[in-house]
Amino acid sequence: MSGFELASYEPEQREDYLRLLHDAWGDLALSGPEFDWWFKENPVDSLMSVARVGGQVAGVASHSLLRVVLGGVQREVSFSVHATTAESARGLGIFPALEKKHEQEAEDRGVAVVLGFASKPTAPIFLGPLGWTEIARIRVWGRPFPRRPRRLEPYARLPRFRHAGDAAKSWPNHVVRDAEYLNWRYIRSPRDYVAVAAGGSYAVVGHKEHRGTALAYVADLVGPAPKTLLRACLAEVRPGSRALLAIPAPEHRAAYASLGFFPTRTTLHFMGKALAGELETDRRAWRFTLGDTDFF
Image: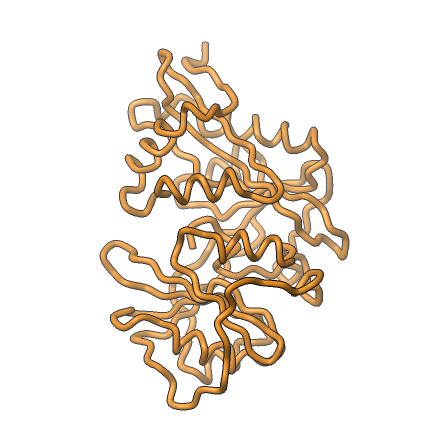
């Protein structure tokens, strides 16, 4: 006997899901409006499940489905997100059971690979019983105490994305950045994002409080001339923010460094598993920004 039963998520379990996330992460957990936006408005789909112990919801997990370019071909990919187990039910194997359920459901619908940014507790489970493969530890860069730059080229705030096609089509493997996705991910989000544009390119800067520290971050940046966009991001940083964080593209690192950014100790533990496709394990074949995660 496993001691628990799995079931697909139903809307009446929303408060149970939010409660377990808050119990695990406190103020860092999804708010109610964020939960509805992330899961109900996803332009592709979401896989959501719960685990019950004694009839009570004791575990939750989800996969967010997104359109991703893999090897030059657009495919559906799932990202493992927003999972936790009640403290009283830990050790029963709930998390790997929920993950296996979603992996099978994703594979059945033709999802190519499942990806994730693992936390310290979940990494051994992904790499062990779930059979995932580590791809990279992606370094976060930061600029402490960011101030409005002295030199600032003209830029505009974007109320809505209207471009045709994938703005990041020149990148290696990446989440497709068409207008539908970007408007969902940043413009309609209840999180604090500002989108800016200059020279036919765009960037998105966000703000959050992490354990009492006010932070800003470059959630997304697409364009061949990053300095203008980075200066615009710096101009949009709220007073009191202790740092501006980012994941620079390799070809943009010199531009970030020239504006005072440097590599921090923080890394994102990126890993994945092949489902109905092949998993590319070369770090250089992937491009991610902080906005490609579920926690920024």
